[in-house]
Length: 178
Image (cartoon, rainbow, N blue to C red):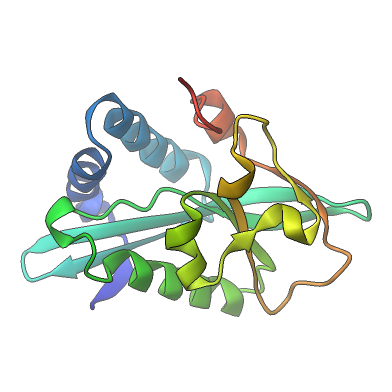
């Protein structure tokens, strides 16, 4: 499955995938998040998956912090992960996650956090973050949905509270809103 770094020429196609994957108002909110992360995070890792003449998936890993007792630790947040509806359940999302984690591991990132379905993300190594001593940044995040994967530069002293970048807070996209 071809995966490559997102380029400026992909922005419209990514917005389409985001809106169709997430649907309705939520799709618009997530598309706004993608644009804001591109603008606000010069180190964002943004990957796309494409098939001939079609962009079918996208993933972003943006900067975040772990507020550990010893010091603030730069970590990443996986969000969003849209896959075009007609390409879902075909391994696109899993391939994007694995490639992103590989690249982040090579960069020395110790931890990647996310909010999501444990049944899906556990297949790529994510586990409940609370089981490893990590605290959610908001009580609106369901405990089971707050997950982490430890990469090779992780050290046992790295525990504490996960902190999203201001972009997530500014757009009110942390946790669930009813």
